[in-house]
Amino acid sequence: MEKENNIEENSVEQKEESKILSSFIRKTENASNQDHQRLFSAIPFIVFLVVLAIIQIANKHNAENKIRLIEKTEKDLKELRWQYMSTKSELMQKSRQSEIAKLLEPFGIYELRTPPHKIEIKKSEHE
Image (tube, rainbow, N blue to C red; front, top):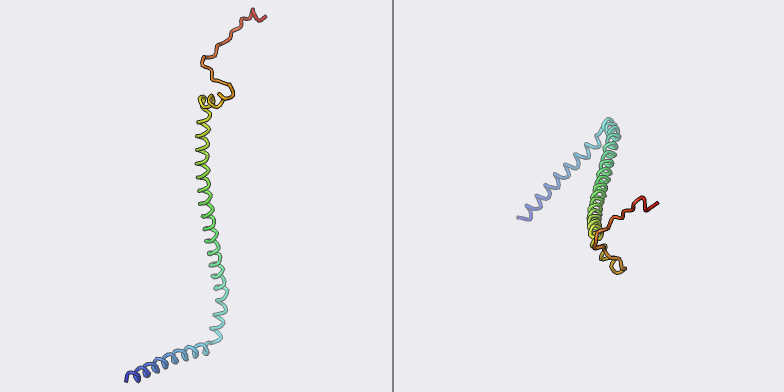
């Protein structure tokens, strides 16, 4: 009994599907010449829309690449700035008078412990 109900339901569904398909085929067969002309007259507009979509996709791709490049450049700039700051700090440390004196001691050059004197020459002695 259940098999008969299933078979009947399947046959009813198949009939409905075939009706839908046949109505679609009839509609396409009955399409007039004007419908075809309208379809062909819309092709340039459809092509225009496709071209706009392609341009939009290319523009988005280009923008994303530029954003990645900007982010990479900013990262490199930040690293270079830190390198600059550390090098500047080291140079400031090494250019102190006490550090220079320590570096020159092995060569026999020592820092003066007494302040320099001013040498005065009288004009009468010079002539």
